[in-house]
Length: 509
Image 1 (tube, rainbow, N blue to C red):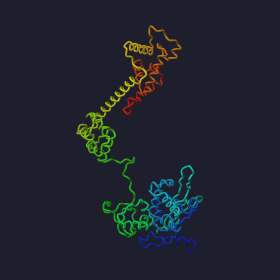
Image 2 (image 1 turned 90 degrees about the vertical axis):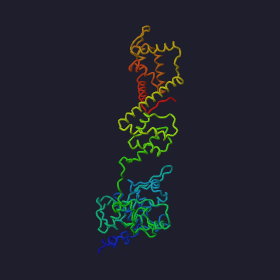
Image 3 (image 1 turned 180 degrees about the horizontal axis):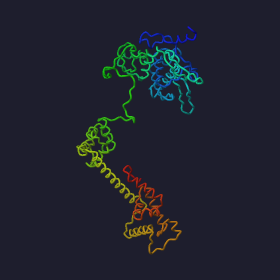
Image 4 (image 1 turned 30 degrees about the vertical axis):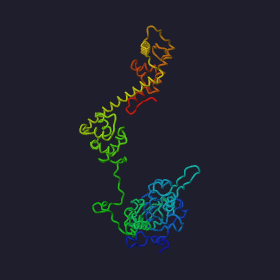
């Protein structure tokens, strides 16, 4: 044997007589990477192409038993166990791999110190390498470290993976896989199955001491992360026997079987829609309609959603929405005082699905309800305006008939002036007054126009447009714009459009 072939013979795995011995790699030395070699520039491994292939290497390290942390320190985890694999699963989903300690604590439920220990394990086994090491700036937030997911050289040697450096100028850690030995294909297939499964958090409570001891022993012997395919990744499948389950086959329950065979461990696609919302069944639609009714109707606030779902089951099954129910309640009539909301709703919805049995009928009921809502809204606005003008306005309407006639005459004079006419007993305004007032043939002085603009400005601040609308109706839009200006006319149109919306109510505070 030549000197070149001697190291390769040492690192290749020994012949495996059976499947039970697939995860035993006795010829490989212990696996440990010192702190100086835990950087990407000094690492001897290669960068993993994706998170899936990296998880294969993680499961191989977990089941090989080559890493013994207690040889190097007396504290921390005793082995590369299922918890380390759970942390690795979170890292495999990050692009780039820049996890914060708080993020991993929140995702895994572990303590901060425990997360740091498992990250150290992944670095010492050559599975992680620093790209940028995190820092803690005084007075500022801590900066997270950025890692490169690495595949150790021991993994390539154990499975007979051949690599090639495609670019001679590139670093050694960029080498790519070019092939695999025939002896390592079976082991790679088993690692692929384990990488496709998800390791979950074990149960905190056990029914008896024997299953608890069995689960601990199974975890120590590679129960979750061992290479043999008989082991299962789900802690819920642990048997009650005191022996280890790493070398035995645990049968799934009959509810998990389909056509006499077990389900594939490959993760299946979610049946949820692309938008993230699932299609509701009959019961889901009932509860959705009941929840919307308790939010929309004031007299149903505080009612039990399941009770309302049972009351509205017929209309929900007929495809009604909360708007359809509001339209029907408008036609049926709502009570002013409600003692029991669910009982009143049951009476009002009796036979509703047979009366409004078509979408056209329901749409007509909705239009009537919205028209009534708009009329009620306008009535409330008129009441607020009248109350504001009566109690809170700076100007009180005159009670004397003689004064009222003078006011009407003044408005008539303003209308006539805005329309270009001229009163017979008043002299025409000068050119300077025309330019100052902005009117074609004004017959009213600047003081009256200023008063009208001030009054209209005060109404706009209260959300009212009565004076401007009256001027537009009597004189026309052009004359009103010459009196109040383009800015006030634009604000008045905006308030009018907002007031016509059923979603807005303008009040004065």
